[in-house]
Length: 314
Image 1 (cartoon, rainbow, N blue to C red):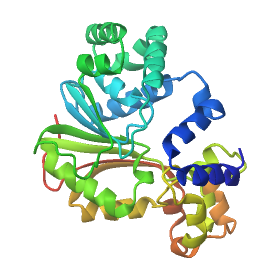
Image 2 (cartoon, rainbow, N blue to C red):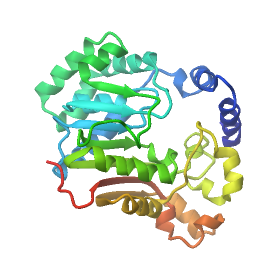
Image 3 (cartoon, rainbow, N blue to C red):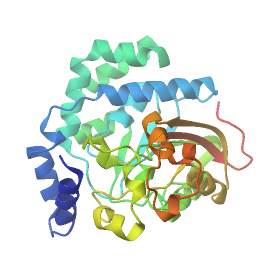
Image 4 (cartoon, helix red, strand yellow):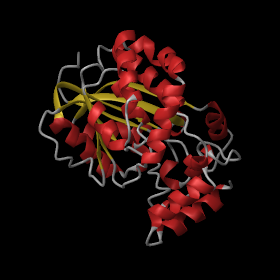
C-alpha cells in the first residue's frame, strides 16, 4: 500500500469514536492480520537476543521480566516463558491484545513444535522446554494462559509508572517499541526501570529507528521520513497508529545518559542503501542536517543498560 494512503487511513481511524475497533477490523479484513499468525520470526529474534544476553552473563531462566509494548499477541512473552522466565509483566498504553490472535499464535507454536525446539533449544534445556511446551498445549484461553505461564497483561497502563513494587523485576525489555514513544516519556520509562529493577537487573531494548512506512511501501528508503520538517511530518505521523519519534542513535544515547543509565553494550545495525543515499545528497530536514551518516542510517539499535553504577545480572 502507498504510504500516504496508509497514513490517511490511520489518521481517519484515529479521529473516530470507536477508533481501536475500526482499525482492528480493517487490519483483519484488508491488512496483515488477515493472515494466520506466524510466531516463529519473533521466536527467532528472541533466541538471538537471549543468546546474546547469555554471552554477557545475563540469564533468562528464573528471571522476572517487565515488557513494554505488548501489541496484538504475546509471542515475545511466550518466548520468555518457554526459555524459563519466572514471570512476565507486559504493559501497553492501549488495549490492543486480542485473544483470538494470541490463541491462533499459540496454535502455530504447537503445530511447529519441532521448529520451536530447533530455535529455542540452544538457549534453554531440552527437558524444561518440552515441559513448558506441554503446559502451553494445555492452555484453554487467555485467562488460562496467564494463570499457567505467569504472563500478566497490563493495559491501559503507563510503563513510566507501573505500580510494580521496588526491585521487583530482573529485566526490563522491549522489542521495536521505543521508536513509537516520545523522548521525554522514554526517559521516564528508563527512570522507572531504575526503581523496579532488582540489584543486578538490566534493561534490554531493541529499537527500530527506520521509517515504518517503508516496511510496507517498498518504494521508500528506510530513511525516507528524514526529509520532512516536523510540521509536515506531523500531518502523516501524529496519531496513535502511526506515531514515530524519528530519534536517531545519538538521541537515544543522550536519553540513557539523562535517565541515569549506564549503557554497557550497544549494537547498531546500519543500512547500506541509506548510507549511499546520504552520500549522494539525500535531502535532509533541518533537525537532521550536519549529523554523521552512521547516526542517521542506524535502522536497528539494541541497547543494554543498568541503573548507573549497578553490577551486571548473573
